[in-house]
Image 1 (cartoon, helix red, strand yellow):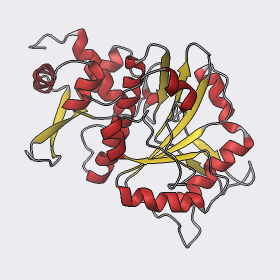
Image 2 (cartoon, rainbow, N blue to C red; image 1 turned 180 degrees about the vertical axis):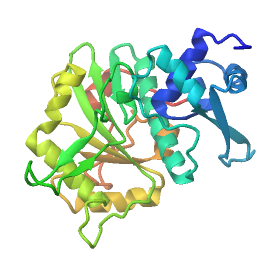
Image 3 (cartoon, rainbow, N blue to C red; image 1 turned 60 degrees about the horizontal axis):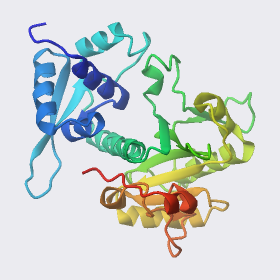
Length: 308
């Protein structure tokens, strides 16, 4: 290679593999390096054909274009050689073009970047997360996504269907040893809330699936994955707009028991942080907003996961 690829560059490539694709600002937040340094390094990685860059206009006052970094086949080969990706990894390369899926996945990325900030800002907390890409990492080493769930009325039924959350994560209070389990669903307003045909591809069915996961205790399989005792979980919906949040809240209220379903919109997360009291519990938007950390923990520590 004409340019020296540093260990820091390998970490950049590893992050892109884990998150599928990342903006310059997201890479800077993950690696805690300046955007100027990141821009310089991604130009080097692009020149070495390890990544490709796509321009996106994210709007705003300046209307400035921002680059999204994807691994190329050459970049994929390099991190396989470094044993960062498992040999069977099926990575989404720079062929992705559908804007709505990129917007969705970028918001998923931002959610988990805020989660990283919670741990960085508070030494008494630790976090771990899994996404659809986690099984591609060498430490995952599984053919299917670790977070895939199968649902059917009969285990032998051919009518079973599958669900893959946008992510699964835990937050642990190191002092008490208590661990909270969460599932995250980022909602861009493209899915039908209730499908009149009864097909298992609407938001209503998604909630029913999580109710089954909660009621049957199948979520307990994450105790082995995370090596932690788990007692229930919370399902988080992060919507793209306040209007969509209102619609989701109404649906959740109509489908009890749903106290374990918490909802917020992306503006609240970016303005206050995902650990702030921004979450609507059970769709009851007329009640006090909640923090994912709970009142006891938030009363003991000062948490801020806002990206500066």
